[in-house]
Structures are given as structure tokens and as C-alpha cells.
Length: 556
Image 1 (cartoon, rainbow, N blue to C red):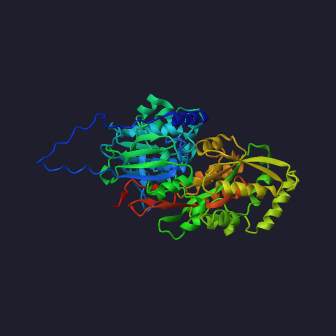
Image 2 (tube, helix red, strand yellow):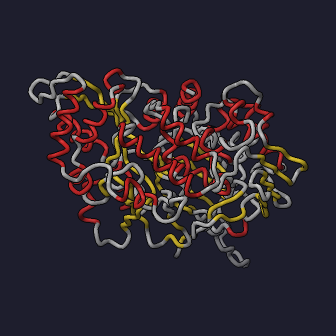
């Protein structure tokens, strides 16, 4: 995986995209007079310019695990199923589908005449290849366990004891895709709409290797837009895909994704009208923007949390991890540092997640009580005692544990890092802050090349397993390298039953274990705060942190 990320980063730096240019010849002189009516000028292309992040780590659907890359993938690909504006599952590449009575066999019927962006035919076999590629351990897909753990023979494929072509997927004919499960999955339709399981073009991948996903000429997709220009550090231009089955519903000629990491530069692009929507708003501008109808603060399903690398000796002790969690004043972080744009997180799973047994998962957790007390002074005193139990002095004047905290420099991340330096010093921990550029931060964290780091998760679907399973020992997104057999057993139990009460109990037990052992450190519940011009019509923002512009328009 590290090798793949390095190759992708190399191509992002070296790949200069040539754009079409007009003729260099001087224009001929116009005649002095003409009786023919003047031709009206061709209408300008309707290009929507937006900013959702800097250079993406990857735009390979199998490898992406970031929100910014995922937002672009939503516009470049279409899965078997999609999610509509109301949040309901809707047809995608598959026009119809059905499930067997026992819940173990899903059959998807593709639309007539599906095409890739290069005009070649897209068939059910392309989905077979794509799903097998995600399961292949050589791909190192971080979401593989999350999206395919229920599929027949996945365990044998991912551990290398069986070949990818033994995965329980098949194409009886060009328009039929069949999936066989080992256990019924109540949210399988959501997985079939998940970007990791987008179809990818086998021919271009085999011809170009890892570089297929960084060059417009080799980047073949099947969604409403396709990449036509890519200038690393500047922008990605996606143009309407003429071969998309629903092209008549697409009103834009293209979407230009500005690749900006600095929020001030992003804000400048919005103020000058270069961009009509920006995700990264300078935090110092937030107070002045409140009340502005173009400034939005939308709740989303997600938690801002910290990883303490469990492979680091100090963090193998749960007492140290729990102490570091308790030493954080969450009210201060959310309401002062984050200016009330986030909410303090007392649980790992925040508001909005659906409990399998009914109701809100957070409301049903821990007997309805938060896992972390809101009494910060009491928490801090307990944190000092836990540090002493772990063999440290917990002396602010003489720290005897030194660590490095890594974060990227955007949003509130740097100010939170500076706060953590002071908070953890109170329990005898000396913290150095390391700022890492976004393109390197995610692969570094995933590889475990850090001690403590900022992390966060925004849900891909509303089932709580989507986030709780991040800490499963073999999950590709388990950046903290947490490994707890009791936790894994609870997750296994949740996967093996269709009884909603049993499944709910197992998932709640899993969160109990996370919080009791500080498998990670929740800090705040996410919102998306962003600027969007009223000129954009027909778009929507989802609770999963995505903007949907594929059927949007720009009002005159």
C-alpha cells in the first residue's frame, strides 16, 4: 500500500496535462462590408468551479478513503445503486435488483447500453472484476473488509489462501451481476451504492498499472462526468460524459475542482467569484460569516477523533490512552477553539446513526449516559491518577513521557494541536507537533508511521457498523492499530445475526469496549461549514459529507 501511495504521489507531481490550444496562425482580415447576417457567438461552456480539498491522495475507487476524493468519485463513477437527495437507495447502473428470501443471494440487472467514458461497452463482468480487485490483498484496498466481509469466500481471498476469482460474485450474462453472501447483511444495498465498489476498467488498469488513475487519457470512468484535464496543485477539470446513460439530466458542461489546501486561498477564490462553492473556510472568518445566507453549517454523521498508535510502547497501556482522553476539555475545544461549529464528543458514535433495534444509536448507548463525564476537573484528576498507575509522574513541571502529535494544517487542526500540547502537559506529557501536508498525511497514518495523530470519520451509510468497525484488528482503516480480541468478537457477533436486538447489543458492546479501553479518543462531532453561492441550483449536501453537483445548474 505504501508503494502504491508513493507511485501515485510521484505521478501527481510529474504529470503535466496538455490542454487543447487554438491555431497559432494570425486571423485573416475581415472584409470591409458584408451582407450576410453576423453569426451569434457560441454559448460559453457552463463550468461550475468548486473546492472540496487539496490534491487527492488517490482517485482509484478501490484505494480512496478520504472525503475529498470520495466527493470527486461520486461524479466520476456510478455504482450498481445510488443514494438520492432524500437519502434513499435508488437505481444506478443496475435498473432493478432483488434478494433471495434467505438474504444470501443478490441479483442486479444492469441497464441496456451501458458504456464507459471511452465509448466501450460496460458489462456485468466489469463489476465482477472490480469487486474481485477490491478483495485482492495485492490491491490493499482499505475498505475491503468493510464492503465485502459478508461476501462468500472473502476471508479466504483477503488472507491469500484463495484466488480473487473465487469471491462470491458472478456474471451469468452481460447484464446480470450476482452476489452470494455467507451471512445476510441488512444494509447490503448501501454497500452496493458505495464508491469503493465502483466499476473500474480492467483494460486501462492492466495496460497502465498504478498510473492509470492519475492521467486523463487513461482515466476511464462510467459516471456523469469524466476527467479531461488534471494539473496537480491547481485543478481537476471534469467534463460531462457523453456516454453516460442519463446524460440528458446533466446540465453542466463541466465541474472544475480547485485543488487548494490553504483555506485563505480558498476563501479568496470564493470572494473573487472564481469558485461558487468552497468547503475550506478560514476559521478566523467564521464569526463574521454567521448570518450570511451563503454560509452553511450542516450536521453530518461523523466524529473528529485522535489515534494513539497502539504499536507505540507507551500507548500499549490503556491507562495512558484513557488518561490522554480524560485530559481534554471537550467543551472548550468545540465551543471556543472550534467556535461552536462542532459539538463536544462524549461518545465515539455521535448523533444521527441509526440503531438496528430502532431509534438513535447514541441515545441507546451506555444506558443513555455519555461515556465521558462533562466534569472536566474531575476528569483531569482521574487522568493524573491513571498516568501514575501506568508508572509516570504526571508532573507538568517535569514531563517523563515525550511524544509527537501529527496533523495536517487546515481548519481547526493546528489550533487543536496547540491546545493538546497544553492539555497533555498537565498530566506530564511533553508534546511536539508535526505538521504534515495532506497528500502525505493519510498514507503515513495508515502505515502507522506516527505516534499520535488527528483522525476523523464521516459515515458512508447510516448503519453504525460503518464507523465502529474501523477499530477491527484487520480493518484497512484501523490507523491506530488497535487490536482487542473482545472487540473483534463483538463485531463478529454483529455480523453473524439478522436479529436486530442481538445485532444492536453486539454493536453497543463493541462501543463499550472502545470507550473503556480508549481504543481511540473522540473529541468532537463533525459538521460541514462551507460557503455556497445562491447561483448554484439543483445541488444538495448529504449527511455523509458529500456535495452532489452532477445534476446541478448555474442560474443566470
